[in-house]
Every structure is written in C-alpha cells, then in structure tokens.
Image (cartoon, rainbow over the protein chains, first blue to last red):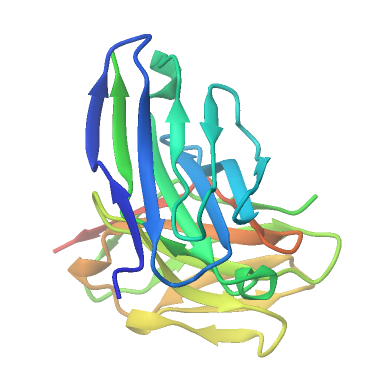
Length: 115
Length: 112
C-alpha cells in the first residue's frame, strides 16, 4: 500500500516554463488536496477535489491549475513558472468528508525552485 | 473563521527534558485539532488528533496534547525529549468539513 505518491521529488524550472506535479493515491480516497509550504508560513491550500471531475480553489490558486479525471490522480499544473512559486508542494488525501475530520494522508512532497 | 496560532517559532531542549509546544485556536464551534510532525526533507505525519472525545489525547512516540476549551489551547507535550524528536511541528484545525488550516510551525532542536 503506497499511500500518496508524488513525483518528482525535486525540480528546477526557469521562469516562464511549465510543468506538472504528479500525485497519485491508491487508497480509493475521494478527497484530494494540494498545499504549498513556505518557510514560517505553514501550509496553504492551493486546490482541492471532492471526487473525480470536481475541483475547487483553495486559498492561493493563482498561477496553478488542476484536473481530476480519475479517483487516483490529481495533477497540479504550473503554466508560466514564476520565482514566487518556489516552494515545497504537498499532495494529500482523505477518504471522505467525515474522515477528513480525522486527518489527511500526505505525500512526501515536491521541492520546486524557479530561477 | 477557524485558525490556529503557534506561539513559538523555535524551541530548543536538552535530550531527556520535557518538551512543550504551544498552540491556541480560534473557532466558532467545537473544533477538530491535530498535531503533525515533519522531519527534515520528509512529508507530514499525524501525531495525534482531538475530535471532541477525551480532552487529553495520546499520540505516537510518547506525545500527548490537552484540549482546554476555557483557554482555547491545544498544547503538545512530551515528558522526555529524544534526539529523533528534532523536527518541525504543526498545529492544525479543521476548517469546515474537510479542509485544514495550518499554523506557521514550531521547529524543535534537541541538544545532546
């Protein structure tokens, strides 16, 4: 049981480049989330999804896009990378609305640097 | 709106001494509260959770936290610190039904 898998673990992008951060879970969780972590700021919610085909914005969605075509996968897309998007990105999941009150399962993170 | 404030950005303790990480919460109703730990270059691991059952919550690795409604606090403690406890700790509150709001984090350093 792999849990939540994020790829890549590290990436350096040039300003203006695009990339997709991958996230996959094998627990049949309906709810999935993308957070970014900046030093001294805790984690901020970028986007979330409550099921396949359903996504919604979190606190800091600007500059990002997501899709949820399957229950397992929730990729995060950066179209025009900017230095302000240098951060550590975490994907997380929970089974349903009720279980989310008991905590998430997190991936190990993607460290992104935009230069 | 639900939120948490971690009162210390950095805590330094000697190995074998108690650890106290302070967290205050703001919530318009009875919240669900969590403590997560993040070791260097690792993901977040759930230490413990409070969901309106017992006010003293025991977690993994000897940690516990006490929910005090009168003080709107959810402080994390451990009686005896170990070198492996060096990490960043996040106090977290449930926002609505399925979203979480994170504190800024407390970095714990353990001195030999």
